[in-house]
Amino acid sequence: MIYLFLTPSESTVCGSIIYVLVKRYPSFDLHVDSLIGDLRGNHVFVYFIVHTKPSGGDQTQSLFDMSSRTNGFTFFSDVLSYAWVANAGLAILDRPYQFLAKNYVVSGQGRLEIPSFKTPNPSSYSEQILVVVTVQDHAIDSNFISLNYTIADIEGNVTFYGPDLSSRSHPFGSGSIEHPFLHGLVEYKMTIDYNYASSQSQVIEVRMYSIWYHNFLPFASN
Image (tube, rainbow, N blue to C red):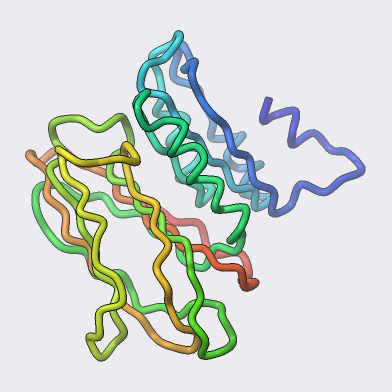
């Protein structure tokens, strides 16, 4: 399907969004390096909302890799929250301009300090941005304990604290989707506190989006 989307036609695909609801998994580990190269060459963002009760197949790593390496994201969600997550993720259509994309490999307990940033908003007025954070590259398991983050200006005035993700409360599945208000022209910092049960490597992704234009970012790496 995605290969066909990239097939040359009269319409450009540069900057397109591919948003896929996944119920059936691939049956084998797909080799997607070439496809990812084509997607990145056209700045195509790939997003997967993956149901944790598949109708078939058992491989999801290639889906996560494809989204992560194109600055998209993948959510793994169960039957209780799947429709909610699928709908919430569509906020990328309302705020299509990505202005921050970071991937981190972590383990155990610790803190991440995201490099300071400004929104693309050219005025000092506030804007409701979209912040997406994912906490694992697969369905939530017992390794995940909690994650919270703080967004504050560089003087320490807190704008947002949350989302209180824990092993007992993760309504969005393997991440969070939030809409804090941030002012234009203000420099902010983001601090993420995470806690996993083991030393096994985990992937945390951070994405931010605005209604204001921002040029394509470098691709996040981990």
